[in-house]
Image (cartoon, rainbow, N blue to C red; front, top):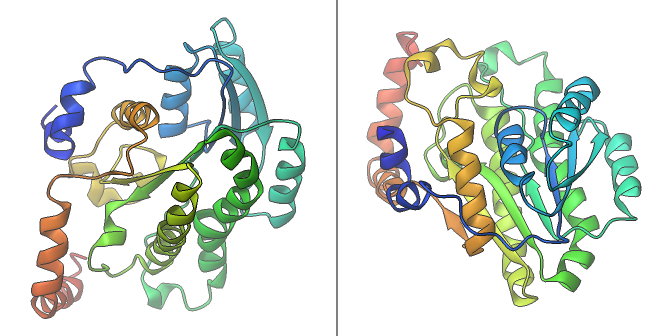
Amino acid sequence: MINKILFFPLVSFFNSKKPKLNLKNKTILITGASFGIGESLTKLLVKEECHLILVARSIEKLKLLQQKLQNNNAKIDIFVCDLFQTQEVKNLIESLKPFTIDIFVSNAGKSIRRSIFDSLDRMHDFERTIHLNFLAPVELSLALIPNLVKNKGHIINISALNVKLLSAPKWSAYQSSKSAFDEWFSSVSIELNAHQVATTSLYLPLVRTRMIKPTKAYDRVPALHPNEVAMVILNAIHSRKKYYAPWWLTLAQLFSILFRPLLEWIMIKLYNKGIL
């Protein structure tokens, strides 16, 4: 509970109740739907009279989720797609053409924590993260924008607060790819908003999902639960608010700018000691 209050004090207050949503006959596309935040969001949205299109790599998990949630108000369609594979993204876009998407929740992502000295022969780390975290959501957005404009729809970007802060060592692949989509989304949001398409960026801290499990140091670090983030997304759908972020993010950004040399010096010391 303290994590929730520290992260979103106002949203935490409203999250005690599910917001009233008007999603009847709306179609919602969710990537990364089979685990973590996507799965939690799906379980909340199935109570609504809407159409959920769930996208993930795991056909078994998607089928299990669809079967488990079939006796609810929402209609569920599932599509298997590895967003790293360019052709699979194109196939997904073709499969989506019969549907009119009203809300796109860009949730799928890939996190890699690895020293650059362990990445010298691993160009595929950068290729994979740039495809998953940047190119695929851009390509999907480009395909969906005409219908989103027509329906005055909504794109929700599940981002990370570290894209707004001083970069840390060992996160070059993840940081660059997430930052790339954040910059792209910030730029196109102006144009989309002018056409009455809502855009929301969620700048999240750590969330207790499969993505952070490989980094053992995070086992001892406070993190949000996917259900908490799913409730934030519901509030974003309801309010069409442009940003959700921790109350302290602006202070952290200012600190990053004013004390950058000091922070970099500290990080070098911690890196040399094997702490970072």
